[in-house]
Amino acid sequence: MTTAVVVRHGQTDWNSEGRMQGWAPVPLNELGREQAVAAGEYLAGTYDVDRAVCSDLLRTRETTTRLCEPLGIDPGGDRVRYTPAWRERDLGVYQGLSYADMYDRFPEFGLGEAAVQAAAETPEGGESLLDLRDRTLEAWTDLLERAGENETVLVVTHGGPIHFVLGHVKRLDVRDAFLEHSMANCGITVLEHPPDASVADTADAVTVVRENVTEWAD
Image 1 (cartoon, one colour):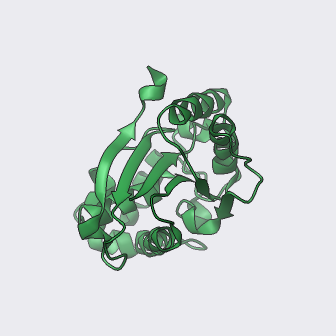
Image 2: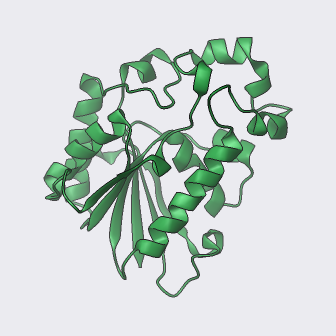
């Protein structure tokens, strides 16, 4: 059984301010660092993690460092791979705007009645939600193809990619994948893929064991 333990990064100031981060090099704030440490200690008592695959953005790198310490994994060693494949959506010229400003000034990006059109809209210098979905699912397939038998892989990423992995497994469209999920900072989602199942169609094979768990905060 391949077990993927998927964790969203800890809180940043832009999270608390409601600003869209995209690929911006935004660090964790004090609360985000505390969240990552607590989540790492929780994971160490719950899962035997073999390796980690992480977004290479600053906030996920900082989260990975704090998650790996109690797991006994060197965040700079060969058991951790940082990759742009697991990055958040590239928001281009809209990076840094508040969510309120984005929806008020650029309603064509809203996932309302025009959900399909909005999902295909590409910000100048950025990528569409469809682009993000395709990139995320390629990364997800690559993770499963690389996984060894009975391996547990930690994935440190962002809300957008997690929504699309869950949406894929549940066979949701782009709109519902985003609107039907909520992911807390350092929320933990666990998925399992049996060794005899095809990687080509993970929607049928993968089981969502836990979703957006924050028991580390209790």
